[in-house]
Picture 1 (tube, rainbow, N blue to C red):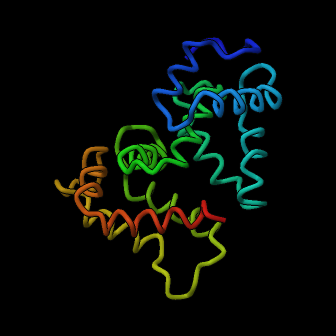
Picture 2: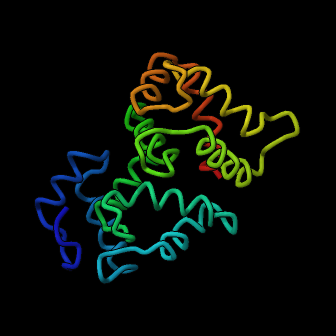
Length: 190
């Protein structure tokens, strides 16, 4: 969306962000100003993104940051522009379940092939549990969580979750959605 190297956010880009995020113009402009201070060329690289997340996850952010960065870098340029950055923030903050599930699907789809395979889900949950300092001995393992997710979501039993299977399952079962979000949100609430 737009040329990110200018010092001022275009009206078109601002309008797009107002329409596609929960942020209003004053907040968008504040975020833009701060983003451009940190990234004068208009692009955030992975190291800068890790520094940004460091405030939330301390020294455990590396693996999680790489997955967040991959999911946020929609055009696969190796950097995140302001629009991608604000969309990332919005996905992290949104209360809209379908938007949140779309974001979570992209996070879990590590290879970007449009499906989530069991090893991808296990990988993300391992990272999430490593970051979560509130875990206890009775918590389910990443393998157990993945098994339950596939049991619930994989409608055609092909050991792959499509975005439709993933979103439909959780939208139809609010209890399962709450449990799923609790397991992933515990890493974000710190």
